[in-house]
Length: 388
Ligand SMILES: Cc1ncc(COP(=O)(O)O)c(C=O)c1O
Image 1 (spheres, protein in one colour):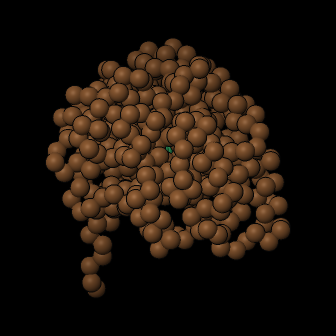
Image 2 (spheres, helix red, strand yellow; image 1 turned 120 degrees about the vertical axis):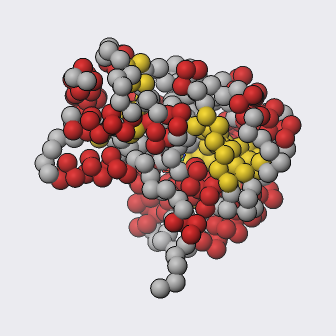
């Protein structure tokens, strides 16, 4: 038989898989496992968004959408949101609606990366960035953000990884897995390094609506010198509890959007037609449900951060955004050993090493689960850690 794809064969299996597979096996055996390893809100999609999609389907909106990269109404809804949130005006041609934020990231990389180009990402990193860079033909380059500064980005750390092959820098705020939100100083560092070295910034804002305590999201695109070099990734999955709908978008400078649209049309064609109606309903409809879910995450955060900090050997920073806690656990075990042990004790968390070397020593717990589950999980985590 002829050989298979070396590109794909070279991609390591997800480090989260081992724990997830084990969690599934234990559940199938009837064991009671509280799953805090994923990133899926436990809320239903707001009713008015569901209705918009049902109405679209029952009125025959079930054909290839046109324009395929986004219907006029859905693209206009994104352009309006973008203007309101960033102050930056974009043409409709700069927007592509994608099946989830994940495909938006692939479009961004596909449009800018040539073989051998280096793309910098920040560790701890959401697990899919490095494989996506590799699949686009690029070379993933990690900047390890130190745990003891709560993963603060500095100009020096970024600058140290810049070479003449650097094409882009990927930044996520609010961050998965750390829950950090980009500060003014960090944004300044990113902008300075990007502009001075003439590189693109892929800015993943998927959790932008989930920022707590009056914190602010800094839209990098609106910073001086950034409009022509910032590619924005966003979507409905997290803030609108729509992970299964697969709806996201990219907003990119015109030449990048043009190439991304080519990749989009030659691969997946379009996001779903009725999904585009859901985009309009989500962005232009009432935002009360988003506010309600955010308030619930904040309450869960406050409970869970306090509960974790109450355990000897656990240090948990409160989070500014998104819905993951990333406590450091100092009990002489590595994060994979901790995740495995905790799973036996009835809680699935993600080992910090899955997010790169600077995540070692941490576990990630999603707080997008019910308060009842979190209360029970906190008891089990304490009992397990105390037993070590
Ligand atoms: C930082 C980040 N970006 C992108 C995504 C992908 O989102 P989607 O489900 O919309 O593809 C996720 C999902 O967990 C994420 O955490």
